[in-house]
Image (cartoon, rainbow, N blue to C red; front, side, top):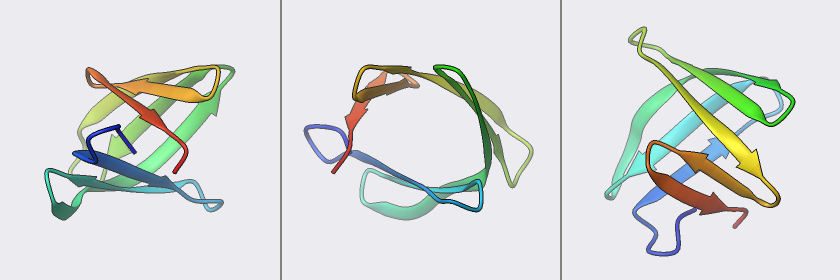
Length: 68
């Protein structure tokens, strides 16, 4: 979750993610893959994105999230 709570991601053990953005639940859902510090996302609508783990933070789409 970001400090402001604008973006929240749930990464599950079955390699699916569910993202809440700006209070809109299930704004993005899909699959993800982790390779080292990089995480790649494939949205159910076929949109690709990526992020990078830096310590206990995840940097994704201009946002910094921490475990909540």
